[in-house]
Amino acid sequence: MTAQLFILSAPSGAGKTSLVRAACERLDKLMVSVSHTTRPMRPADKEGVDYHFVDEAQFHEMIGRGEFLEHACVFGNFYGTSQVLVERSLAAGTDVILEIDWQGADQVRRLMPESCGVFIVPPTREILENRLRGRASDSDEVIERRMGDAVEDMRHFANYDYLIINDNFERALDELCGVILAKRVETLRQSTVNEPVISKLLS
Image (tube, one colour):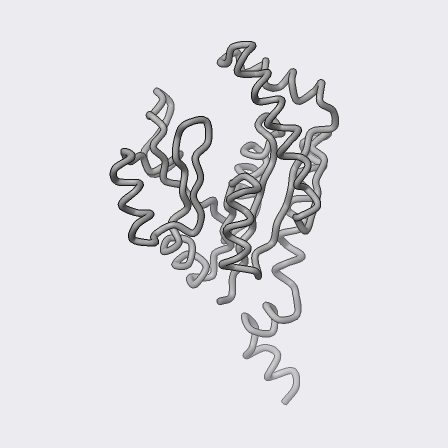
């Protein structure tokens, strides 16, 4: 396999999705895995772009068939990553990003220990709360719950290979792209992808 699997985790409101979207626009051969979910579609959602939307019966059938690389229940809805879709993309030479929480990351690491983990945090709790309130889509009760969950999520940062503090978006984006580009030029990957070049150099 000549491509890299990246696991990106962050508390809600840390800016992970915006960073991932910008990284995919900046770098070639990089994609985000589209998860399956039982969450109801929102007006702005697009099937196959934001999520693959399925009902709970379908989701549990997929679990039974062993189709998920990882899956979890978050706020009463199920989310899962298709193992076949991820492996197919990696085999085609495309780096894949999984946007999942620390629990899903633990599941993926057990199956694919060569994956690279990146954790993203906000600079302060106050900024995180302001970002959540700025969405104007959640009640105070929901925001309080998300803040509690965020603190618990951030306790797991040490299980990841890289930590990015999203204080300045452009700097955080440079750091994320730097991680991706560094993994692309690791000796094992370079010597595999560019085997003809290396062979000619050494012959």
